[in-house]
Amino acid sequence: MSELPAEITALVGQNQYPKTATFPVELSYSYNTLSATENGNPLYWDDQIADELTGGMTVPPSTLSLWMRPHRWEPGATEEQVALQVHFDLKEKLGLPEAIMSDNTLILHEPVRPGDVISHHQVLRSISDEKTTKLGTGRFWVIDIEYHNQNRELVGIESYTGFGYKRPADGSAS
Amino acid sequence: MTLTIDQVGEGTALPELRYDVTATTVVLGAVASRDWRPMHHDYKFATERNGTQDIFLNTPNLAAWFERFITDWTGPRGRIGRMTFRMRDSVYPDDCMTFTGNVSAVSTDDTGCAWADLDIAVNVGERLCCTCTARVALPTNDSDNPWARKGQNWTP
Image 1 (tube, one colour):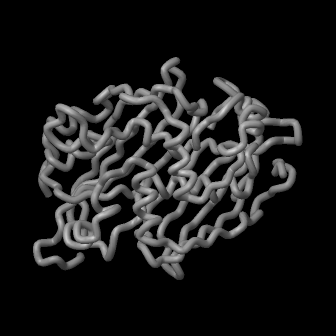
Image 2 (cartoon, one colour; image 1 turned 135 degrees about the vertical axis):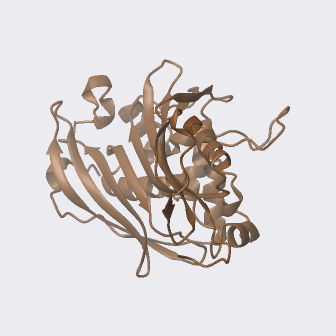
C-alpha cells in the first residue's frame, strides 16, 4: 500500500478555496432544474403561494451547489474551470485519473432567493487507505462545502464522498 | 392540500414515482445543475474513459429528483432539512427509474418543529441504484409553516 503524502494529510480540516459566486442566483436558471425533473411544486411556480409561505420566490434547495459551479470557460481562463477543486486536486496529487462520487449529504438552512450572491469554502474532512472496488484501486475522500449568502447567513452544507481510482490495466474488475 | 404531521406515522408509504430516463433526461439534468463533466453528456467518454455502459445521471440532479419525490408527497409546506444519499449503481438512458419510500420515524424537536424521517430507494427493475435518507419538516396543523423557522428555531 502506498503511503499518503504529508502534503495531503496536512490539508485535512483546512478551509480551502474560499470563493464568491461571479453571478447572482437566477430564478430563470432554477427553472431548468424544475423542468429537468418535472417538479410542479407550486412554491416555485405560484407567486401567491411563494409570498404566503416563504415571503417571496425562492429556488429549490437541491440547487444549492449549482450557484457556485464555475462557467466551463471564461475570458482569461487557461484551463477548464471545475467545481469542487479539492476533489480534482486529490486526483492529480495522488495520480488517480478517474473518480466517482458515492455519497452526498445536503443540510439545508436559510432558503436561497433570486438575487442572492452565494459564497463557499471547501474542507477536506478525511481520506482513506487504499481500497480496491469493482472500478479499480484508489482512495475514498470526504469533502465538505459550507455555503453562505451575502448576509453571511448559512444557507447550507454539502458533504461529498468521492472515490478516486485507477482502472485495472487489463480492464478487468476485481 | 397540506400534509400535516398527524397524517403520517412510522411505515407510511410515499406515492411511488416512475420515470423513463432518456439521454435527454441525463443531459438536461447535468446542464440544469451546471455539471459540465463529459460522462454526463459524452457517450464515448463515459464508455471508453469511465468504463460505464452509457452516460449517466449526475449526483446533483439526483438530489433534485429526490426533492421532487419528497415534495410531491408533502406539498409546498413541506421543508426538507437534510438528505443523505448513496450511489449504488448508475441510472442510464432507457432505464425506468422507480422511487419508493416510507416514513421511518416521526418526531418533534425542542423548538416544536415536527419532522418525518424518510427512507427512499431508486431502483431500475431489480437493480438498486441509489438509497436516500431524508428529514422533512411538516406543519403541525393547517396554520403552521415550517418555512417561517429561522436561526435557532431551524435545526435540520
